[in-house]
Image 1 (spheres, rainbow, N blue to C red):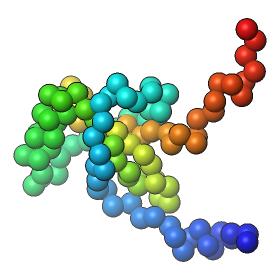
Image 2: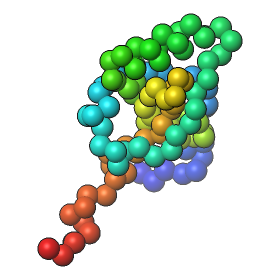
Image 3: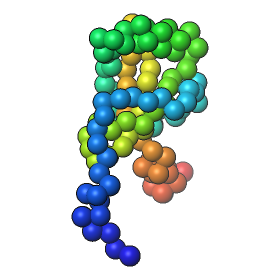
Image 4: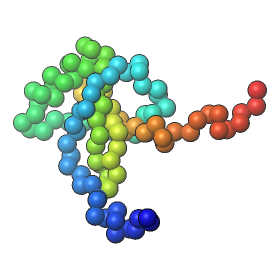
Length: 109
């Protein structure tokens, strides 16, 4: 079966401007090669307390929140929510299948 452009349009993912954290991991567990593009996150008017609590929890635990977000439809991105300079940052990440294995480069010894 061959997918057409029309097939992709029917399943287009909409941007919701919501960051839904799926899990928390230690920053040391993430290979730096996975990080791609940083953004600053600010709280919504009614979310200031939750924003502050999340930032404090991440700072104290040394963990980051792993989420999937839609910034530029139709693509869903893997992202890490990290404390940064008294605020929060959202750093888009590569999925594992997007990184090349260094073995593929045939680097001379």
